[in-house]
Amino acid sequence: GAGVSQSPRYKVAKRGQDVALRCDPISGHVSLFWYQQALGQGPEFLTYFQNEAQLDKSGLPSDRFFAERPEGSVSTLKIQRTQQEDSAVYLCASSLAGSPRGNTIYFGEGSWLTVV
Amino acid sequence: RKEVEQDPGPFNVPEGATVAFNCTYSNSASQSFFWYRQDCRKEPKLLMSVYSSGNEDGRFTAQLNRASQYISLLIRDSKLSDSATYLCVVKGTGGYQKVTFGIGTKLQVIP
Image (cartoon, rainbow over the protein chains, first blue to last red):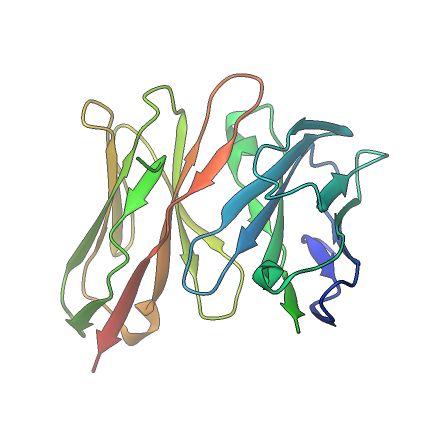
């Protein structure tokens, strides 16, 4: 498709389980962002990739969170030993970058994670 | 101080009213500014970019004040369909343009 694609759309995980969330950005987009959005809050930055390079991971809340983008396209956000406070929507976004027109950030529909 | 601050609202306004939202940002080197709209349980979608000269798109007007480090969104003749959360977005500068969101301002347009 033409947009940012995320999977799974919904995930229920038992506390302590590992989860992996996938993001397929718009083809050709250099920049890829992961955000965490809790209910009633704005999206909180987690990490940023420029192609395959992870330039900023300062927003990852703990070492249980890990993200990769090995070939500069698809990205995976992995959460190990999930906790209830990890329950949120995880939004992936991409942008073309490198030009004023490249500034627009496009979001996927999000992966809704519930930890029980 | 948060990098991007918004009043979360909610703003409850009657149909046809004019409503304005402000957003302040802390990094004076920020380069790009946007308003995004987010409907309940949906992803954020770009409403409009914000330029220094101000810009208008139909009933929506966005303004940027670099000296005071705030951006604004004005909605005229509010429609029921305008009910949503409006997110202020600030993009950084340099080789890595970090994108930071405000908490969002909730608007409810009442019949």
